[in-house]
Length: 390
Length: 143
Picture 1 (tube, rainbow over the protein chains, first blue to last red):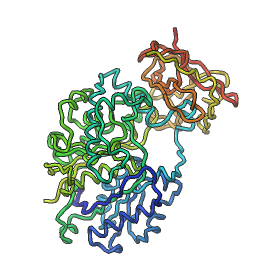
Picture 2: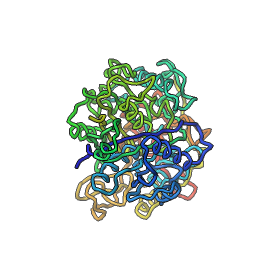
Picture 3: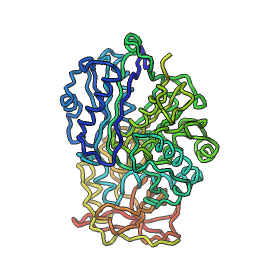
Picture 4: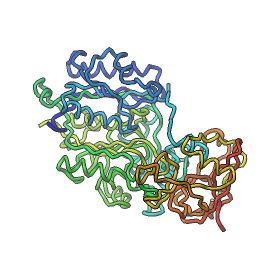
């Protein structure tokens, strides 16, 4: 038994909206019904529940139990993954581990957050002591500091960042589930000229907070075969690193945990970056995409601008990027946002990309970014390679 | 384009919480003294203050040492949007300052023009009074 002995057999996703007028559990119920319809499973066959973090659920330390109860799920494995934006991808990895260990067979991974409509988080962290008193805005300020560091030490072509923003936006236009406000094409000039939030981070670098939900059913590969599922996404490599450089007082913030997580993921999958058919990186800020290209080994550290300029990231290009628009152009559904990247990768492997279907469905690379530490980059970096069945 | 940054003297700052293991740091700020945690075994400083040593995982290896607060700009950003009580006081500097003791501190920089701000700029501490008698560390160019 191993990671690749599990399989994603169905995905579900709601429309992403600026603010939800429907309760987070109603969105969760939508996903449950979509997944039951797609798999033909009875509700009672779902014997595991793994939730992503949720700003709406953050006030309840019993969140996974409360949600299982709200959806009337009777399960043998029940947990919330609390590694921020890495939670949705981390949930798939944990589902595989739980299936591998025999804890459960059919696991619902549910990512639901109505952070805009109802946030219940009260952050107990360094912030109230060390960053709130200095007027730190949170992630935009962190990425302002980080981007300035990158520019000073490595040089940064902002038009290259604009190219990434434009490719993702073009994909969101083709994605009916993306937030409507964002489904308008932009140009590189629009990106460069968008107003500064935390210099040199611009408005069009940033995600727009939204509400929505998504989810997956993960089962054993054996069960998937037995039940006759022809469309599967098999995780064949995974890496996760939290708090890279925790024991150092001074770090280079452009060196991230994806260097470690990516190497582990590629080694487990027996693949290299040049083998990747489509790329679905967690995107909270545009520069994070470039930094991941570097850390995952698509290009050298500090050479991201040149690599971006010579690569075609459209769904028809040589490295299709976040083909649903990513979070920056589809909207960030709070701490469920990483689900947007994961679900799009699975959708492409299933050949259900519609107007934005990629031609090469041999595999997909998905990543996570979670949490913002004090003056560095991010807490958790993760990467997973998925391949279709057979 | 030169933009003058707000010196933040008009901001009624939210009082920083104080934890059991950070009290020595905050007490020293009442006298405008800067204390850093130092791991005797690792021979290195750390910031922000933790409940344990980031190097060895043993709180018993830590002691507080007074430092000058001199250092240089490690990286910086212009905050053009702040939450209350910083709203209406934008734009202002936010920087990571690398102290000469090799720790990085997030702080506001004041008395610094946009033409003057640069990675590597030498800075020294300047203290902003808090309403409870503590002081908040900021930096200004050391020229």
